[in-house]
Image 1 (cartoon, helix red, strand yellow):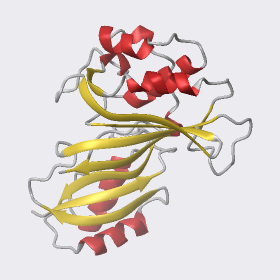
Image 2 (image 1 turned 180 degrees about the vertical axis):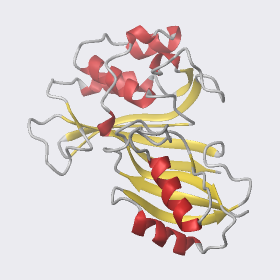
Image 3 (image 1 turned 30 degrees about the horizontal axis):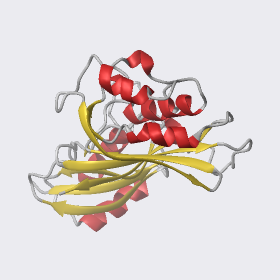
Image 4 (image 1 turned 90 degrees about the horizontal axis):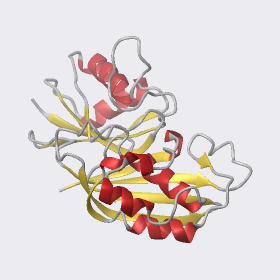
Length: 250
């Protein structure tokens, strides 16, 4: 049974995140993909993603895999999918991979970007993809806070449900990079790591913003990592500003 690796881009505005949900729920990226792929391949298809994205979050290069009994050229399957998928979900490419490949368990690193507009007016072309913050932000202070994230830490204080640890890896993760830069009138916060807990990046962003505007004291990130106290976290940032940039494999 051939295994195919899919690279996807999507606007998550109208979706309840990646993961398939029960009947009658809002559409999800996984659910839409499985429905359309199953129709094309004429078999029940399960599409496994590299990880969940939150409701309303986006992806520039999400990775997933599926297995099929059908002999079909990857390029042909990609064309067929793009003809039938909603316009806000695009299959960038499909390639055959080894049968043991797993989009989630083989992922080594992921990088997310969060966009914050600090200007009073937001372009209509950006409104779905940015969060507007009108308070003055001490960006230098935010950068110093972000440095504390780098390394291997227990991030349970940044998880939406810290008491429910994921089955693989608990709540410890390795963050390779956490950077903040100004670009075209906005702040871009990028975080790269071995994996992320539920709403972890949005919690990081919200905490950095609250420190930057003076609602949380300097050193909050270090205290959260040391104590695991979720109560120290800032307001979780809205999902619309978050985009999964890429997923890296061996």
